[in-house]
Image 1 (cartoon, helix red, strand yellow):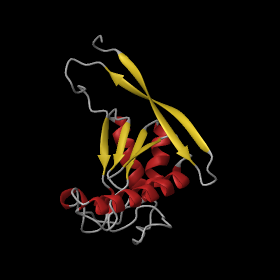
Image 2 (cartoon, rainbow, N blue to C red):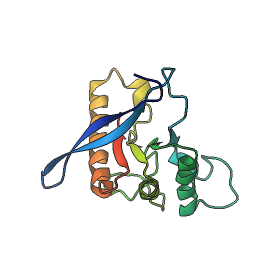
Image 3 (cartoon, rainbow, N blue to C red):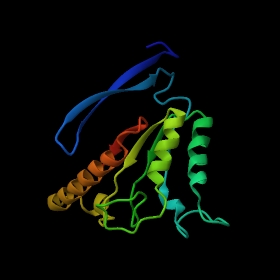
Image 4 (cartoon, rainbow, N blue to C red):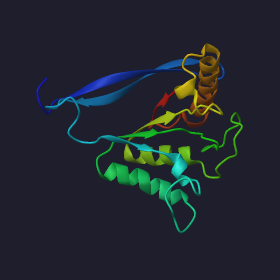
Length: 178
């Protein structure tokens, strides 16, 4: 590889809709050759919806508005980021209007706002699926097959719901699970 070269990696994404129709899509991801193992520029970042919740995040003098979320995505794009990882779509509260999750709804469809703005900016978004009510699964549950299986089943149901709701967004690039 020559320094500065850009290679395109194709990510294959397979989906099955509620009618059992299967589709496979190819999504390109650019790989940049650099002098170091890591890129010399930051090309992606995290959005943690938990900071939107009163008392959980940073202090503010007013409630979070949809334009605040859009502005965060735009700011990431302005500094050259092309990838957003949403840490989780739920954590004791749902950041999208879910029919599956047994958590209160935040009141703003944070996931739709992020994906819609990322679409406009030509960005990629990966959604973290969360763990349901098992907050400590990754710290205390790794040796417990039944507990892990419940986490996988939970994540699979959330992933399907997210795909059904947001699969039409070109920026929706994947899901991160347990």
